[in-house]
Length: 290
Image (tube, rainbow, N blue to C red; front, side, top):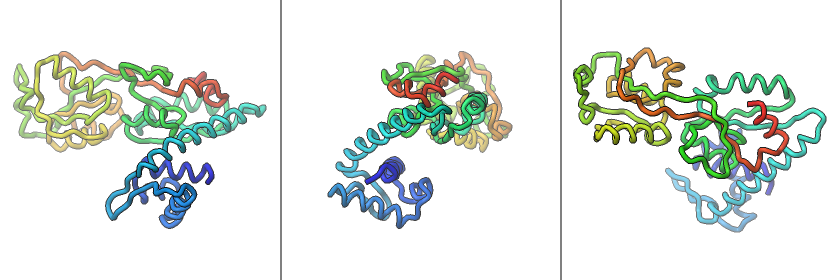
């Protein structure tokens, strides 16, 4: 058993998909299967239950995932401490963020850091915003760009970066519900809404509707703001998306902003890290550079 195998196991435990894991780890499916089989043989336990459609962790797999995450985090911290002993700081740090954040929030920070520490490699991991904090907690990323929760977990340190407005958007093309938006009192209980399935934006949306004593007509709940814009641009309903996304997405030209009062409460986006890792040289160097 080695750390490379542990990281491959953790990737599969996260994706629960052999094809995605093979691609992410640059392995052939047969090699991936052999590595998992070798781990199971070493442990004397089955780690995954697999059929033609699904992959799931067994109870032993869930317990081993906890061990593997802890071992991988400790190994990374040890590597970071060794990196700090070099005269020139070197090593690798990982950052998890959305595609939008990667070219709106991070460029100046990463450029400044690379100029100061050219020997440190930065690994950028992208995905949906709802997973950001958990990626740091699980040790899958050193840092993450994330929406700051109303209550920050005790184990995390956040550094605020920018406040994000939430905007109502409607189709720019004629659509069945357009007349409802031209009335003085919009009948929100009849307007088809396309909103985030979860996350900080969804919490703000729920509070807004509750404060207006409205039971919304939810047409679709989706993961990803790009999906909201796509459905709205097709004329399927009214969406709510962050201004940050509207500023960068090509689909923005296919929707129109609605001037709705009162506005939804904005939320703050920041960079988070585990408190216990801030003192390691690589992590501290990046954190102090933000």
